[in-house]
Length: 229
Length: 256
Image (cartoon, rainbow over the protein chains, first blue to last red):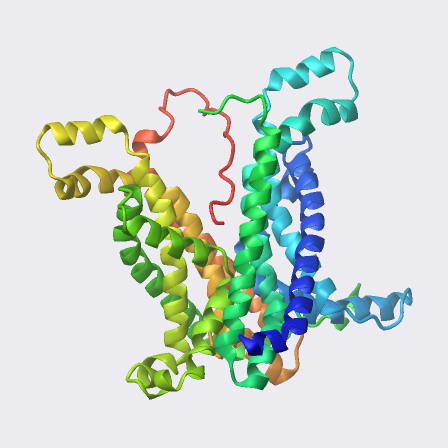
């Protein structure tokens, strides 16, 4: 216990990196999820095929494989393109950027399915009513689709976010100094790996438990006025 | 364009030359994944029954276990066992150390088993609780004991109802098994990392690994689709000779 207190600065810094990484990738995946859901439900066959390929490929390959591919391969590609076009000099992709981008793209595929399901749960007549009243598409989205979509999507959103938060642990493997990395190096240098990995374990549990409770409260808020069996 | 391609070479001959290693990696991945799934599945059945029956002692115990293992990353669980066990002298001197806890393979298997058992318990509990009440009442009325009721009525239909969610769990376990490569094991990703490290490559090993995982996921999806067609036939839309009904809402991720 004293050991953990000695290294608390490292553990706190690692936890903050983990939270930042998770939130950064969450923003990206929500944007991609909305775009993906829109594409999957659109009338254009090209958009539907592209979105279908995106979700199939991303969900077929493990997270860590894609993270490594982007971190090691992406570095080479970006610089090859830069050298070829002369648009930019040598760029270094940081672990944080590679991790946030990859995890964001991966979970964008899961959010695509969540949002698609939520939009499909909205009775079609309501959207038709909006069209009949002469509402523009943006107005229909803001006033009819969005408020209800949030409610239908929240359980899936909660689920995805919890998995996403835990997935960020993998970015420690490419050297990002997140919670796992810092706990591991503290454990290495003190010879107390169990103690520090247990500390990381407890911190992750606390993060998922707090998210779960918060999102459940949000769910109750958005479901006011809905009879629950 | 040709210029661009020369910057991104995929040395296919290197991949072909080391393909036997990749096949061995496939074997390691499948072996670990399916052994963990089998052992975890066996552990999950009694735990799910205890949760569903709201056993006064075992229900809270099992719930705590599944909550903790579903709330933490598999990577941390694996590190805790593989790197953590060696901290204690008593463990290092015990009979468990030499054949088991000092071996990366056994530690990965233990971590994966405990992880999948937690998720499987919860999805099986859901399937058991969803058994139509009338079926249970009929079983009681015909004099079935609890054990006979579970064996003859509840579990067979619960297993069927759990198939779609379980197919997600199988794919997640396969995806999760890449953690093995972080504790020195030569699974598919482990071989990919080895190849890239050895020849100082950026793509070949990872791209090959990605393709192999993709093929395995595709095969698993196919198997489960066949299983669903066979065991959930009673739930399939009735064939009327008309065009099939439009697809309904896709199941989102069951894993949390």
